[in-house]
Image (cartoon, rainbow, N blue to C red; front, side):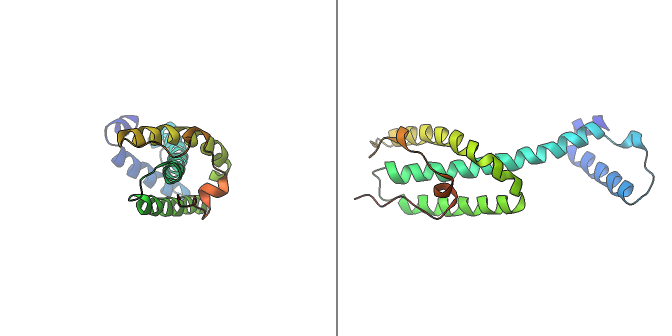
Amino acid sequence: MSDLYDTDVLLWSEHQADLLRRRAAGQLVNDADMDWSNIAEEIESLGRVERSNLRSLINTVIEHLIKLQASPAADPRRGWIETIFRARTGIALALEDSPSLCRFIPGMLADETTRARRVVARSLALYGEQPRIGIDSLTFTEDQVLGDCFPEEPA
């Protein structure tokens, strides 16, 4: 079965799922056909994918919150706000589906704030924009990232 896992993961997963369902229904299956180590690896990867998705959505919100505060540009502001709405909706859905992801949020906020600062600084430089405020001083609470708040409009 490990050979099939390496050559056609879709066919492997369909076969393993069938075996697991049959076994759960009380049918006898040949244990040698069960690819236990790869089954365990795939189950673990589901959690990694969920965490990665949450991390990406948090990064998107933070990046766009920084742009709203630091960029002097007026035209893209509505788009940044829309992107934040969509990302926050995705975060809410991810947390609804997997509430245990909440425990990763504090660490993700810190990590993604650092990453987003670098991206925004490069983005502003690419467009020849000088930040209105110091990007490196910006931090965000969980409520600011996951909630409904937005930075004040620039004067």
